[in-house]
Amino acid sequence: MTLSEELTWRGFVNQMTYPDIKALDKGPISFYWGVDPSADSMTIGNLAAAMMVYHFIKAGHKAFLLVGGATGMIGDPDGKKDERTLLTLEDIARNKAAIAEQYKTVFAGQPFDIVDNYDWFKGVGYLDFLRNVGKHVPLSNMLGREFVQSRLGEDGSGISYAEFSYSLIQGYDFLTLYRDHGVTLQLCGADQWGNSISGVDMIRRIEGGEAHVYSTPLIINKATGKKFGKSEDGAVWLDPNKTSVYKFYQFWLNSDDEGVVDYAKVYTLLDKEAIDTMAQQVATNPQAREAQKTLAYEVTKIVHGEKKARSAEKVTAVLFGGASVEELSEEESVLLAQEIPTGKIGTTLVELLVGEGVAKSNGEARRLIEGGAVSVNGEKALEDSIVARRSLVKKGKNTFIYVTE
Image 1 (cartoon, helix red, strand yellow):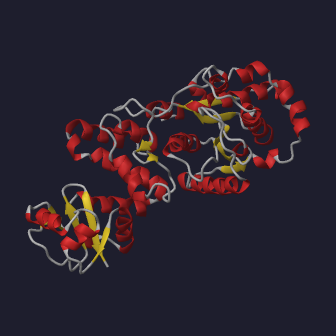
Image 2 (cartoon, rainbow, N blue to C red):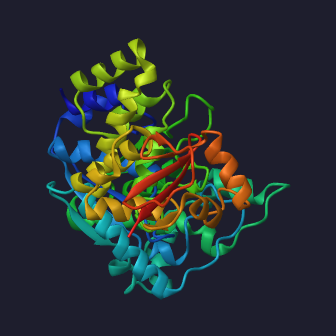
Image 3 (cartoon, one colour):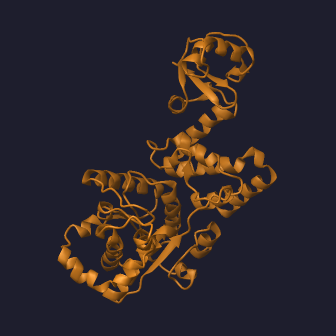
């Protein structure tokens, strides 16, 4: 399958400056893609574009992955209703380093170079930038940007000169990479189209060269019609300190039947045969949620590694699939303990239920037990007793207490 065919089949086709997507089948092309270091982690919104980048690398194109040390000092205003709060230099340095590490994880085994736009901006003087770059950029182009129009409109909050100039900075990134590394293509998300085009125009006006932009569409939750990528807790992060491995796995496991196959095309490296099997599973036996299980494991494996993906899979089986807590390794036991309330071995059921807030009083706890609402390791507990070994206490379908040492 050619790259253009792969991108089309997986749903990675949106706006592009190429007259024909088959231009991507020639090559190799040197391209770049970057993430704004506004946080110390990428989200699964960034991951969608990253997976598109992966296919470009796999097809033999040369990747330059950018961390925005310079652009991070201003903050990307695109899509933002209000002026961003400036990050400290320490925050930017930390965020850059964290995103670079995530590049290394997501693109493990693939060739790429990491570049930082602060490296070429730190020596550029203001007057030099105005003479050598600003002189070539028509003000009408900058005023025409959608984010500028929305901020300057009747209900807009206004825009600073710094954020207004953001597209100039990003355009200069493209110009520099074009000059220094022969980069002729920028990959971006759909929301970055306007900023990316500024680089194409800058290369044409200043160097007389030809450059292109290729964007991936926003991923839409077909069940809700809204932008895909948020949980009840907000954004889904790649950093396990922000979104735990278990919660990350659960997010994908809870995917809707309407979208699970499309999500697998975007967020996994499974081939067409494997994804066709997933589609068949959804069509014939959606209750088993086999497609969701495959999706959850595959995406978690890419982001957190195979071992942690297996751990999340096993913990989920203990909580919802009838597997025994005795089967958990020490690392998996820790993972489970981070996600649900825990109690000590040697504690009575009543003490556990009250202590973890499952019941408000000893009397209510006893009534729950006597009514058959409480189970220990899958067996209904009909009387109060001491929990003497590692166990999973469950009330109803979704309330758990992990009893451990």
